[in-house]
Image (cartoon, rainbow, N blue to C red):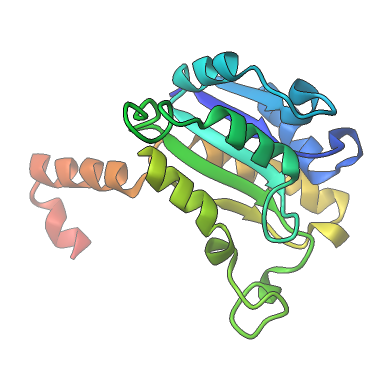
Length: 200
Protein backbone atom coordinates (compact mmCIF):
# COMPACT_ATOMS: atom_id res chain seq x y z
CA UNK A 1 0.00 0.00 0.00
CA UNK A 2 1.36 3.40 -1.01
CA UNK A 3 0.52 6.29 1.31
CA UNK A 4 0.51 9.99 0.46
CA UNK A 5 0.71 12.38 3.42
CA UNK A 6 -0.26 16.00 2.81
CA UNK A 7 0.97 18.06 5.74
CA UNK A 8 -0.78 21.39 6.25
CA UNK A 9 1.01 23.69 8.68
CA UNK A 10 1.70 27.40 8.20
CA UNK A 11 5.22 27.13 9.67
CA UNK A 12 6.32 23.52 10.01
CA UNK A 13 9.80 24.46 11.25
CA UNK A 14 8.29 26.04 14.35
CA UNK A 15 5.95 23.16 15.08
CA UNK A 16 6.84 20.55 17.66
CA UNK A 17 4.32 17.76 17.14
CA UNK A 18 3.57 18.10 13.42
CA UNK A 19 7.26 18.57 12.58
CA UNK A 20 8.11 15.41 14.54
CA UNK A 21 5.40 13.50 12.69
CA UNK A 22 6.44 14.89 9.31
CA UNK A 23 10.10 14.05 9.86
CA UNK A 24 9.23 10.48 10.80
CA UNK A 25 6.90 10.13 7.83
CA UNK A 26 9.57 11.25 5.36
CA UNK A 27 11.63 8.23 6.44
CA UNK A 28 8.78 5.70 6.52
CA UNK A 29 8.64 2.96 3.91
CA UNK A 30 6.02 3.34 1.14
CA UNK A 31 5.10 6.82 2.43
CA UNK A 32 5.39 10.06 0.48
CA UNK A 33 5.17 13.07 2.80
CA UNK A 34 4.75 16.59 1.43
CA UNK A 35 4.69 19.98 3.14
CA UNK A 36 1.83 21.77 1.35
CA UNK A 37 3.00 25.20 2.52
CA UNK A 38 6.37 24.63 0.85
CA UNK A 39 4.76 23.20 -2.29
CA UNK A 40 2.08 25.88 -2.71
CA UNK A 41 4.22 28.84 -1.71
CA UNK A 42 2.92 32.05 -0.13
CA UNK A 43 0.08 32.29 -2.67
CA UNK A 44 -1.00 28.69 -2.00
CA UNK A 45 -1.12 27.87 -5.70
CA UNK A 46 -0.82 24.25 -6.79
CA UNK A 47 -0.15 22.49 -10.07
CA UNK A 48 -3.50 20.75 -10.32
CA UNK A 49 -2.42 18.15 -12.89
CA UNK A 50 0.68 17.20 -10.91
CA UNK A 51 -1.23 16.98 -7.64
CA UNK A 52 -3.95 14.84 -9.19
CA UNK A 53 -1.39 12.53 -10.75
CA UNK A 54 0.23 12.07 -7.34
CA UNK A 55 -3.12 11.20 -5.78
CA UNK A 56 -3.66 8.51 -8.39
CA UNK A 57 -0.31 6.92 -7.51
CA UNK A 58 -1.35 6.24 -3.90
CA UNK A 59 -4.00 4.10 -2.23
CA UNK A 60 -4.24 5.96 1.09
CA UNK A 61 -4.38 9.75 1.32
CA UNK A 62 -3.56 11.35 4.66
CA UNK A 63 -4.33 14.93 5.69
CA UNK A 64 -2.00 15.86 8.56
CA UNK A 65 -2.56 19.13 10.37
CA UNK A 66 -3.03 20.93 13.70
CA UNK A 67 -6.63 21.76 14.55
CA UNK A 68 -7.25 25.40 13.58
CA UNK A 69 -10.61 26.74 14.73
CA UNK A 70 -12.13 23.27 14.43
CA UNK A 71 -10.75 22.74 10.94
CA UNK A 72 -7.44 22.70 9.07
CA UNK A 73 -5.01 25.52 8.26
CA UNK A 74 -6.02 27.40 5.08
CA UNK A 75 -3.35 25.81 2.87
CA UNK A 76 -5.20 22.48 2.95
CA UNK A 77 -8.47 24.16 2.00
CA UNK A 78 -6.68 25.89 -0.90
CA UNK A 79 -5.26 22.55 -2.02
CA UNK A 80 -8.69 20.90 -1.85
CA UNK A 81 -10.34 23.74 -3.78
CA UNK A 82 -7.81 23.48 -6.59
CA UNK A 83 -7.12 19.74 -6.75
CA UNK A 84 -10.41 18.00 -5.87
CA UNK A 85 -12.00 19.44 -8.97
CA UNK A 86 -15.27 18.81 -10.79
CA UNK A 87 -14.86 16.00 -13.27
CA UNK A 88 -11.92 14.57 -11.33
CA UNK A 89 -13.07 14.07 -7.74
CA UNK A 90 -16.84 14.51 -8.15
CA UNK A 91 -19.54 15.20 -10.72
CA UNK A 92 -19.84 13.51 -14.14
CA UNK A 93 -16.68 11.48 -14.71
CA UNK A 94 -15.38 12.57 -11.32
CA UNK A 95 -14.69 9.13 -9.95
CA UNK A 96 -10.91 9.13 -10.06
CA UNK A 97 -10.53 8.79 -6.28
CA UNK A 98 -13.15 6.10 -5.86
CA UNK A 99 -11.87 3.20 -3.77
CA UNK A 100 -9.01 5.12 -2.18
CA UNK A 101 -8.82 5.80 1.55
CA UNK A 102 -8.81 9.12 3.39
CA UNK A 103 -7.23 9.39 6.83
CA UNK A 104 -7.04 12.47 9.03
CA UNK A 105 -4.04 12.83 11.37
CA UNK A 106 -4.60 15.79 13.65
CA UNK A 107 -3.18 17.40 16.77
CA UNK A 108 -5.16 19.53 19.21
CA UNK A 109 -3.92 22.02 21.74
CA UNK A 110 -6.62 21.19 24.29
CA UNK A 111 -6.96 17.98 26.29
CA UNK A 112 -9.17 15.09 25.22
CA UNK A 113 -11.79 15.78 27.89
CA UNK A 114 -12.51 19.19 26.38
CA UNK A 115 -13.86 17.52 23.23
CA UNK A 116 -17.21 16.09 24.31
CA UNK A 117 -20.80 17.15 24.92
CA UNK A 118 -20.75 19.66 27.76
CA UNK A 119 -16.99 20.11 27.51
CA UNK A 120 -15.13 23.27 26.60
CA UNK A 121 -15.42 22.53 22.86
CA UNK A 122 -18.88 20.91 23.07
CA UNK A 123 -18.28 18.37 20.31
CA UNK A 124 -16.05 15.36 19.74
CA UNK A 125 -13.23 15.58 17.22
CA UNK A 126 -15.09 13.03 15.09
CA UNK A 127 -18.08 15.38 14.93
CA UNK A 128 -15.92 18.40 14.11
CA UNK A 129 -14.20 16.48 11.29
CA UNK A 130 -17.51 15.73 9.55
CA UNK A 131 -16.74 18.02 6.55
CA UNK A 132 -13.72 15.82 5.77
CA UNK A 133 -15.84 12.70 6.18
CA UNK A 134 -18.37 14.12 3.74
CA UNK A 135 -15.56 14.99 1.33
CA UNK A 136 -14.53 11.33 1.39
CA UNK A 137 -18.13 10.28 0.80
CA UNK A 138 -18.61 12.69 -2.11
CA UNK A 139 -15.41 11.56 -3.81
CA UNK A 140 -16.05 7.84 -3.29
CA UNK A 141 -13.20 7.41 -0.83
CA UNK A 142 -13.32 5.29 2.31
CA UNK A 143 -13.09 7.48 5.41
CA UNK A 144 -10.85 5.88 8.02
CA UNK A 145 -10.76 6.34 11.79
CA UNK A 146 -8.70 9.50 12.44
CA UNK A 147 -5.54 9.61 14.53
CA UNK A 148 -5.82 12.37 17.12
CA UNK A 149 -3.15 13.57 19.56
CA UNK A 150 -4.74 15.74 22.25
CA UNK A 151 -3.19 18.26 24.62
CA UNK A 152 -0.20 19.12 22.50
CA UNK A 153 -0.05 22.73 23.67
CA UNK A 154 1.42 21.57 26.99
CA UNK A 155 2.94 18.26 25.87
CA UNK A 156 6.41 17.34 27.05
CA UNK A 157 9.11 16.28 24.63
CA UNK A 158 8.67 12.74 25.96
CA UNK A 159 4.95 12.81 25.11
CA UNK A 160 5.65 14.13 21.64
CA UNK A 161 8.30 11.47 21.06
CA UNK A 162 5.87 8.78 22.26
CA UNK A 163 3.20 9.96 19.82
CA UNK A 164 5.42 9.33 16.80
CA UNK A 165 5.42 5.49 16.80
CA UNK A 166 1.73 5.49 17.75
CA UNK A 167 0.97 7.71 14.76
CA UNK A 168 3.07 5.57 12.41
CA UNK A 169 1.38 2.34 13.51
CA UNK A 170 -2.07 3.86 13.01
CA UNK A 171 -1.27 5.52 9.69
CA UNK A 172 0.26 2.40 8.14
CA UNK A 173 -2.27 -0.13 9.53
CA UNK A 174 -3.56 -2.02 6.46
CA UNK A 175 -6.74 -2.95 8.34
CA UNK A 176 -7.89 0.52 9.36
CA UNK A 177 -10.84 -0.03 7.03
CA UNK A 178 -13.08 -2.23 9.22
CA UNK A 179 -14.39 -4.05 6.14
CA UNK A 180 -10.89 -5.34 5.43
CA UNK A 181 -10.41 -6.55 8.99
CA UNK A 182 -13.85 -8.17 8.99
CA UNK A 183 -13.13 -9.95 5.71
CA UNK A 184 -9.90 -11.37 7.15
CA UNK A 185 -11.68 -12.58 10.30
CA UNK A 186 -14.50 -14.16 8.30
CA UNK A 187 -11.99 -15.96 6.08
CA UNK A 188 -10.14 -17.24 9.15
CA UNK A 189 -13.40 -18.56 10.59
CA UNK A 190 -14.31 -20.19 7.28
CA UNK A 191 -10.89 -21.86 7.12
CA UNK A 192 -11.16 -23.09 10.72
CA UNK A 193 -14.77 -23.21 12.06
CA UNK A 194 -13.51 -24.32 15.47
CA UNK A 195 -12.33 -20.74 16.05
CA UNK A 196 -15.92 -19.53 16.00
CA UNK A 197 -16.52 -20.98 19.45
CA UNK A 198 -13.57 -19.07 20.84
CA UNK A 199 -14.83 -15.81 19.36
CA UNK A 200 -18.40 -16.17 20.67
